[in-house]
Image (cartoon, rainbow over the protein chains, first blue to last red):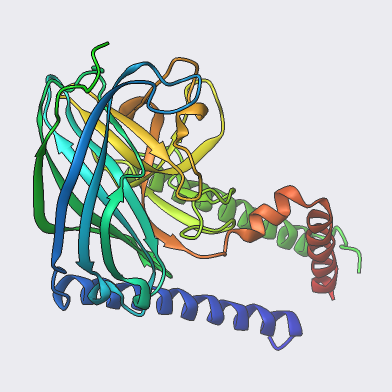
Length: 180
Length: 173
């Protein structure tokens, strides 16, 4: 009843139970805080320029020659209210959504990882997109598209959450610059 | 110290063995039950590589959910490329959805390039139905590092076995 082994076993059981409940409490508290007590941050996006070219979007054997698009944008956002005590990082990304037959499409053109509240104010001007957009069909055909800012809050422990800003910037894919 | 094969002791040993088997099978049931609930062949995974840093480090445990018919851009998914056995945990950066299927392109946060080179030859997108085994919904840091130690470090395995043997011998007293 009182052997060392028994004691270690009981102590270990207690430690693990308490840790599990603590982790659950931290996770639930931060999810509730994010959901009910935080206002969605104001976001302002502006497409400065957009370009459609024909060729390989990237160097590499798996990329086909097709129409691809590059853009420059301005972005202003204050994401500091999103940081709770359980926020490890904020993965922020700018995604372009555009329609098509048969596929509806969504592509990330720029992303950033914000690791602390101090870095959470974004003020980018004339920023080149990290990633080019290319379509499954290989052509854009002058389609309309919308750009929105979304984020994924990564906790220290618990549930991951996703959300997005309310502002959507509309733009159109121009015709390719050079004739093929 | 050595067990005597008298009636009472034999029964005791057998009961202990039976209890041990019960624990094993209950754990197995729990695992398979979780697989059914989440609709994923592997509902809990341990992070093995650093390609999603700083979000996930080696040894973190991820809980998957596979009942979403369509995954979203920005979700973190675990997938197996057809024909390969290694599950990869990366983020969805592109998404083309039709009523029949969903094509995805993924990229690790810590990688400079997207995963196109990881897919099969001439495969440009992942198929959500066939290759994605779940999206990450919850996360616990570094508890899984023990499993990485055990599988990669031979010393750790021997130490664990020696420790367990030592405890078993102690218990007899």
